[in-house]
Amino acid sequence: MRLAIAQINSTVGNFEGNLSKIKAAVERAKAQNADLLALPNNALTGCPLDALTADKRFEATSRYYFDQLGSLQFPIAMGHNGHAIIITNSNTEACNSIKLNQEQTMTVVGDSTALPPSTPNTLVIETCSTDYPHFLSQNTPSTGCRTIRVNMVGGNSSHLYPGGSTVYNAIGQPVQQLALFAEDFALIDTHAIATAQPIPTSNKPRIAMLHDALVMGIRDYMAKSGFTQAALGLSGGIDSAVVLALLHNAIGPKNIRVLLMPSQYSSQHSIDDSLAMVRPLGIQHDIVNIAPLFDTARQSLSDIFAGRPENVAEENIQARMRGVLLMALSNKFGHIILNTTNKSEAAVGYGTLYGDTNGAISVLGDVYKNDVYALARYINRNGEIIPQNIIDKAPSAELRPNQKDSDSLPPYDVLDALLYDLIEGGMSSSELKQKYDSATVERIVKLVWRNVYKRAQIPAALWVSAKPLTAKPLPLVNSWLP
Image 1 (cartoon, rainbow, N blue to C red):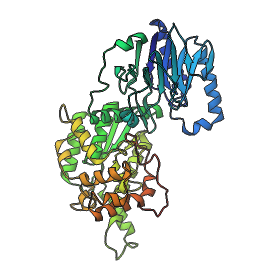
Image 2: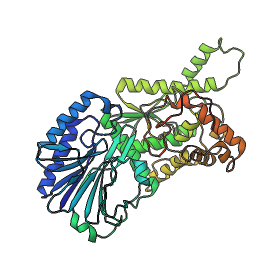
Image 3: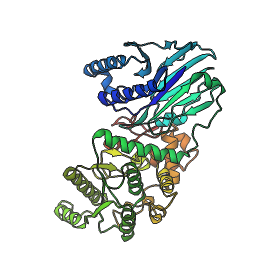
Image 4: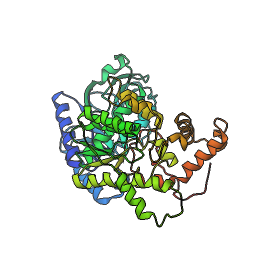
């Protein structure tokens, strides 16, 4: 059998656009004399559907467009909400078996379908919508038959689908793989799978994959939300520098604008480092000194704050003023604001509500601090994009004289390892204390549990781990400590 695979980038609810992509794939399959076209799960509706699955109007519209697929008069195997669908001769059937061109048995399964009994002559097509973290951890099939996984590609909200549709022989060895993080098409002779030579499924390092996933996520979030321009605040620190580099790779320099917003506590090297990054890239930038605004706010509050020493209240005013300026830029010129907070900071609440938490999408919200540094080094692999001084210097919020992150947090090597064991590993406090300093464990666990209210108010993050902070949040109010 000649099987066509179309790995397409669908948009949730864009039925006309998705149908157009499918029609183009059908025409290509016909031109190459294919017998069947296989598509990812929810190729017509886009995914994830979330609450739309209960929307009666959405379901009615879905049925209308499924009828349009039937009118193409070409066999299509795809998934809908995790269940297999085969479309032939104007009929849409929720079934999982079809016979074409003397192929003994072809079984189509969706994400939520159990594999039926099979033989070495069986061909299984898995119509998938496997997101990035699960793609990295997925097992090779052990069905004892030829298996073809057709996976969704593209970013939809927090979900990132890497593509990488793969053909496996009967013993679970990959023999062909489609592109990662891009639409792709392939024609497969299913009888030749048994004799095809095995291939490595990916030779990209983990950080390279992470980079490409985030770039795709930014690009698709903007395009599918109708934004063409983006902005962020550039502080001279590692997080905003990495976000800017990822954004530059996603949409190029012409539609990017950054604000440098120094205060009296900002170091000159932070300003210089920021300028050293934006100027070679040709990115529009403006410097707005917030010191006069900060002084005005302090003066306005002086009677109320009289007799009390300056503390985090004054520090947070600076962060919130920066947020106000960024949102004003967004409102005036239509730029989408990208948030630059990383997962390590979000987990422990090391950031200012309505300041650091501003933005429409959190690019690094599921990326630990040490991986932010690894991304910076990867971005600089062929030449300096992010100034080396940004990578080398000690991280600081620069909200008071000589401030450093290490004043408030353990070293990031320790913090990230502890957070990973707590969040991804699900370890209890007693288990953590067997690996880390007891006082540090108690302090960090308390910070994670007591800052749920902050995480509930941060932008949606691009999900690149199996345990994003915002996927299954803790109860907003709770007194439990693990």
